[in-house]
Image (cartoon, rainbow, N blue to C red; front, side, top):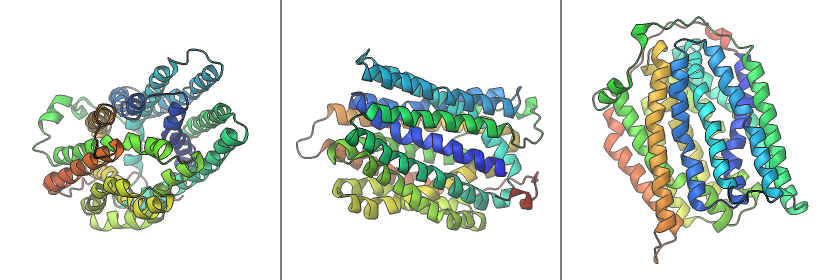
Length: 419
């Protein structure tokens, strides 16, 4: 499991690079708000498509092969981003580059999806049920701490390239080189990972249509519906928080990244406590803690505009709320799905979440691009709509599903999970 921690550190570093710098890079090559909305949301629909591919592949290929293939696919996307930066700097195809960036980033998200089912299936087999909250809390604490430290240092480097040298595109190129190297290291480390025996049988196959029919009836289906509706509300505003800080509040890259990562840093501090809470009281109760906080976060963005207001008034609560929510949803899926069906279930689940993301992203893009309100800032309007939909999801669906644990025999002893 030490290999998993090391791989996770390099993998998270690469993922955080993509999550935090694609939008600033997109803006730097003159992408429109509509294009930014597409790149921020459409990838989350493409990723579930990749997950459907990955869940199908692990039925007849080894989890190791599918997982490493997805990681390597991600790795070789980074050089293509370098090419885009060079072409823009050299004034070649500038009007087409935002659309080319969208296509390349969608490929990145496709490979991200392919690697998800084998990873999810693998970790579900090797981490005992009654230890998952504590283990994943510790794992996330280590990997995300390393990722955050690296990203903060790189954000100051990017500011230096932009304001000190007036060479911001070369700063992005250096960032993309880091992304390429860390993903290659991640792939190498996963060749050293432990892979328990995994034999897929015909009876374990999950039919997508049957899963969808059972959504209104099954416990996991109701859970999926709740997360989907909350995600729809979330993504109406999510693609535009970064744009709002960079264009409306005029934050520098270093300040922008610091604020962006501050909620994650707060979450890291609460990971051990929330992990123990999950193991002791269950994932649904932990989920409710996050669900109390999350709906009100967009409203604060309407009133808070200074870095200190955003950090103390929004990001601290965001870190606690989203950490509780994400840890609970992940562990809830592990607990409710038999081992051999996890790959397909997570693929279908994330496909529905992806539809909610693209729906929210498109709706947010339309609202901010084509609706001009004289009485309210366009960004504030989509923040308001986002909060209302989140409240609706919590009020209508949160109590529709219950805690259910699937009893599975641990493959490893807890002592073997040392980190």
